Length: 340
Image 1 (cartoon, rainbow, N blue to C red):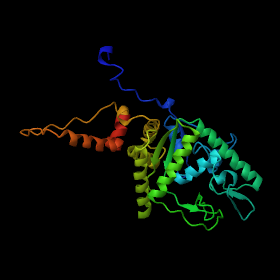
Image 2: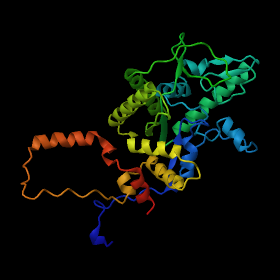
Image 3: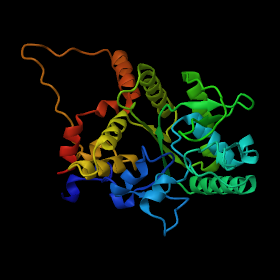
Image 4: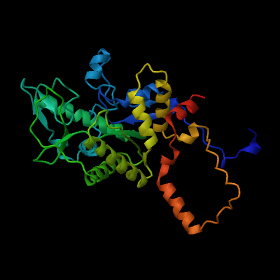
């Protein structure tokens, strides 16, 4: 293309190459780990707590190494993440007074991440030091992050009646108090996200936040699907209210499809690369070459209407409020275009 045919004002910014995509992922466990998929897609994913080099891959996975940028467990709920960030900042009770659940064998399990160290810690001193090292690594990680990817879901949480703090439901085989399950309403989620946003901004004012709402698991009950739909609706509103917060339902659908694909599937790596680029901030239309659907022709014999400017402005505002949902297209078409 000649210089006469393009200009800085009209030329589209080329999509960011996968090698330049640097991401931080907070939340992941052996049942769902987005970070390895993003690495497979070509992104560089930060890792604040790398595992010992001599350990086997199976052992590393069991202890949550490499499944996210920090060994914080699956997380998913904005209230749980907000609480974790406040502890990393040292302003929450859990920073100075962490909760550990005693086990029958005398070990202690970190209540904030009961699945991360299934073997438990031998005594209170080592468990406390281990927790503080995790929080310090997390604070450094967030401070150095450009784009934070948060896989969101609606896990069952327990509420400590004494403090009001929330904790993940422990996996089978771990003894825990008989605490009530935390409720999940739109008000609860909004308050949790407000705390989360304030905590992240305090650690890193320039941080860009990418929200991914995970689909309800196959065979989920109606209540779980309703909770997931509520979370998706709230995430869309959070993104509308903050320029540094992004949420795209198309990306949600692509991540859901990627997680369901076997690693050996023909489309797996192409889809992983597409998800990595979208998490890195690329626009769908840029990845598809900027192609847009042609305008539908006016029916013959029908005169175009002169639209009221005020009505047109209102319609435009509604369309813009929908954001990127207007870009939704068939996933197969996305893969087809991306592979060209």
